[in-house]
Each structure stands twice: as C-alpha cells, then as structure tokens.
Length: 242
Image (cartoon, rainbow, N blue to C red; front, side):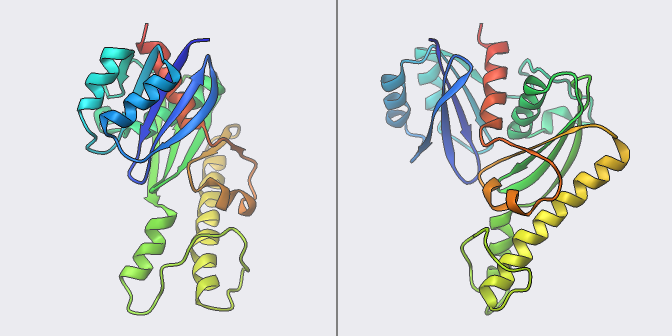
C-alpha cells in the first residue's frame, strides 16, 4: 500500500503522520527538522509521496531531500486545494487553516462545517456546502493564556493543564484552570451558538493538540478528530502529487 508522509510544523511541535493509503498508520513527533531526522523517516517507511505544512522558518534542506526521494509538495497559497478561498487576501491564510478546511470538505463533502483548531491559537474555520472557506476568527490558545497570566503578573504561577477541576477554584491552581479551560470551553460553545443563529445546519469539528482538555466541558455536539489536519494534508497531497 502506498505510503505518504504528511508533515505539520506548528509553533509548538513538529509532527509527521504516516499514511498507508488513506488511513493514518502512525504519528511521529519530531525532535527537530534536521535532514538526518527526515532521512530516518524515509528509510523507515519508504514513502512514495510527501507534503509539508509549515508555519515556522523550517530547515529548507529538508524540502530538497523530500523532493529528491518522494513526490513532494510544499503547501502554500498557490497549492491546488479541495476548497476555494473567496476572502480578502487568500495568500495570508495560514497553512494549518488550509489543511483543516481541506479535511472538513474531504470528510464531510457538500455540507456546512465549522472546524475548530486548538493549538497555539484557537482558529475557527468555516466552509460552506460549496466548499468555500469563508473565514472565521482567531483567539489566544490555552498555553498562551496560561503563560500570559504568569508572565504579566508578579505572583501567578505557570500551571500545567488538566481537564479535571472544579467550577469554583479552591486554590490558585484550580482558579487558573477553571478560568482558562472552562473560559475557553464557554468561548467555543458561544462561538458555535453564534454560528447556529446564522446557519441552521452545520457540522462542528474539533482538532488540535489541546483538544482532550476541552471535549468534556463542551455542551454542543462535536466531531473530535485528532488527525484532522493530517487528513487535510493527505487530501491536498493527492491533488498536487500526481
């Protein structure tokens, strides 16, 4: 079965999903973007295709390596996509958002979809039933909120995220957890409710590394998929790596 490597380089982590056909076989968290690290993956999995989505200044030599050993595509505003982007400046759309929206229309074709990414930032990404990415919104992510309270105050500590905490915090740690995680959950539910007033019928997808902390606290029905960005990258790779 044909193997495709889908690389997602975000602000927090560098990851690679190994696809066997259309299915995710394994997800690897990369220690760095050295060519030796990428070569190890190539040697291990023998991929035919590869795609890179990067929102950071990554090592450009890995593009040369991947192009030499696989049918390689670098995700950009000029990529052929399963979506159209009738927005003001499509070239400014982040690669992660393009991938999330591509996954939304690939997994749920012909429907309205709000795809929410929980990473360094929260991104809300709306595609309609004509596969048009109409835009959405961006707000600070979980770690950004924890760090902001720690770094911009004299006494508040930097706490580790957890999904089990009370509504009414009983010490500094639980106050911070309730404020950030429950506050974000209510924000997410509120945004979903606002979309529901405008669009009567749509899917809600949730993805990203911080997703497990929020699923227990959301009241709206969602489809939680930790591999959504990778599935979008795979769909884009199939359109661009013939």
